[in-house]
Length: 442
Image (cartoon, rainbow, N blue to C red; front, side, top):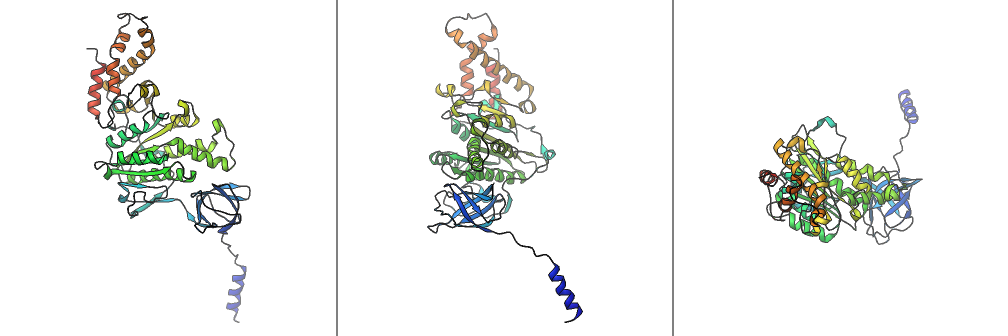
């Protein structure tokens, strides 16, 4: 053999051998929702397939590691998995196909159609969990957004790119208000994420929102309550990714996530399965860390001019507004709207508690006369709440305090201003004029 051949062989022997990571393993633990596997090397977010005894196959996603085990959250919880079942890593769940074909359709957490129509013809892909954004590329909230609801337009004015928490207990008209927002908001695209809801509520919401007028601009992502916690989290991220895509096209997007609490509950299930220590009311730290990741994806894009204005519903279990998820949502959003059970019991819909609600951007988007009128309304509304019992018992005499007199006499008009029929829309200018009329001294 020539000297050149000998040198070449020597070089091959000295070159280190790169061993690819093992892409398969075996199940050693399974509790019906989370499987623990050994022998497979896969990062968090990797998609996996697991052999089942019935041949159907189990599908899951790597959510973390515990001791020497790779923890896999199953997306089909009924999978029949036996000890020692083969686990194969099939890829990564990190991109979302997007395109105009999303509009007018209902999708699940994996992007499969739920409406019986054809699959999406993708025009591109975006990151499922978003990308790190330079905060300086986010424009300020400086333009009002007409949402079609009189009480919000007039008293809790919303701006393009704002993030609002909608705090409500069960049965106080949350779904009614969301339907009004979807149909009445002046937006190019509406993305609604129904996370952890009952199937009946999903069906009713879709039927009320996807009307002939609104279908062409609406996308619905639905993940019902009985589905895997990893699917509930993935569904919320998918809706945010779709909103990101349309914002990058320069569109004005309304994003509704119903509900942020159900997403938190899903993360709690996963966190506890990974061995996280529960803190306040059983929530592990990963729940509080997840909420900002979702909320911070909304906002205005300085480069494209598009915006994502987001409403995140937060369930106040037992009407407890100090729940950890409620606290976290209030801390990071640009305002919150509280729905009152007392008003709902009185037949006032939407049951918005004006005194407990606030919009932190209203001073940047409203004229001074509008702000003054809203301030007068809120003061009189609060005065009525403070003095109504005294007045009903006959302990207050008219003429003692002019502001209290106005609060008592204008209360019926104020309640009429807050309430609004489901099928009625009240624009920005009409809401202002009605507010000026209610708060005038004449």
